[in-house]
Amino acid sequence: MKTNIKGVGVALITPFKDSGEVDFEALGRLLDRVISGGADYLVVLGTTAETPTLSAEERIAVTKFVIEKNNGKLPIVLGIGGNCTADVVRSIQTTDLEGVDAILSVTPYYNKPSQEGIYQHYKTIAKASPRPIVMYNVPGRTGVNMAAATTLRLAHECKNIIAVKEASGNIAQAAYILRDRPEGFYVISGDDNLTLPMMAMGGDGVISVAVNAYPEKFCRMVHALQQGDVKIAAPLHLEMMEATDALFAEGNPVGVKAALTYYGVIRNNLRLPLVASSAALDARLKNLIERYDLK
Image 1 (cartoon, helix red, strand yellow):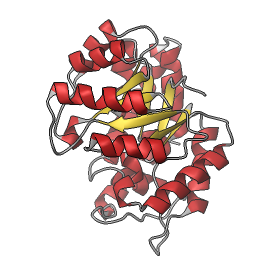
Image 2 (cartoon, rainbow, N blue to C red; image 1 turned 90 degrees about the vertical axis):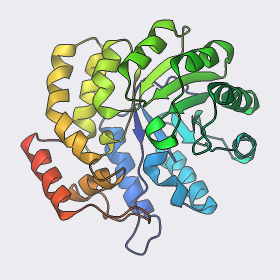
Image 3 (cartoon, helix red, strand yellow; image 1 turned 180 degrees about the vertical axis):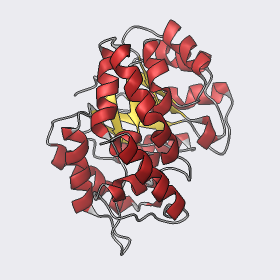
Image 4 (cartoon, rainbow, N blue to C red; image 1 turned 90 degrees about the horizontal axis):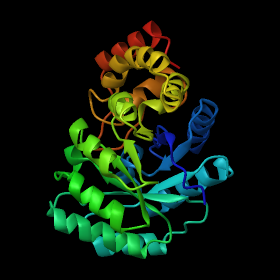
């Protein structure tokens, strides 16, 4: 399996038709866009995909479509997470993982486990999983932060845990993980606008929302950072940062769907409780995209 998940991972959105059904034609256009734009791997059924609003049948169909469309070109990471450890284990063991290279699993949300609870959760699913696990720390959504010490304990003790998507927004926390991680353990930014500082410290890339919208420029930045070329990467970061902030101004994936609508890739449809972007955000994104020639 392709478990070299360095560089740019795309947190894929799920396009919807005006009728509310999944728009597979638009999803195909998006995949062509990000693959040709330079993405290094695909992340399916993450937060950005509005996964909680998809039925079990739709999740299977979306995963199958991406695997078939990708046709082995890029590694695929599949989101399977939850706040009941037994249910996560059951989902992993009953999901057809043919064509899937790794599993992205978010820290348990809402029930706010202790650090020991988070450790035991990931240790249990790592032991049960036939695919490597990428942990996902996003306290702004889950209500609990996975401390650097917990991440490192799991990284050192569980061989089937190969990475963390670190989206705490805490650069100091990321620095401790980077300093003390075992060899071969990937530290991946979960915040688009923190990709440059994290990679400057030795981070391995990003699982990105923004790359759905402007893959060419974003991938150029990350690939320059992989070569240690901050002189190329820094100006690209500065050109994109305001538009990237705007993508999250009304929630995710509200902004990125608005941007993709501007590009003509999708229709601007979301499922409740999310609603489409405001006219003000649409205008702001259009202005920034055109001002900085983002594509």
